[in-house]
Image 1 (cartoon, rainbow, N blue to C red):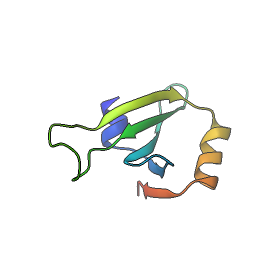
Image 2: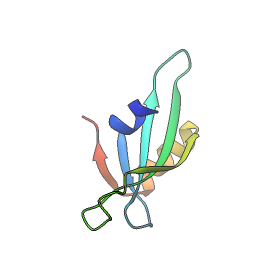
Image 3: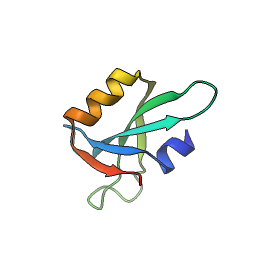
Image 4: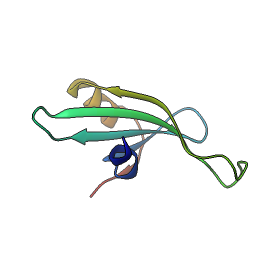
Length: 78
């Protein structure tokens, strides 16, 4: 989980404020692809707030490609 949040492959814009979709491919015996929705702490938030994982799930290749094609990419790992 820590690897996914700290080293994402993509950050995708969502329709909720201060929220991003994190995409990460984990290469192991079977290539696994995960989607994480994160609520990000911003400068306007209470200083005690922290980033929060809202949703975590495995997704299939079709969903991965659809997200990259149809959504705004905020960050791409080089």
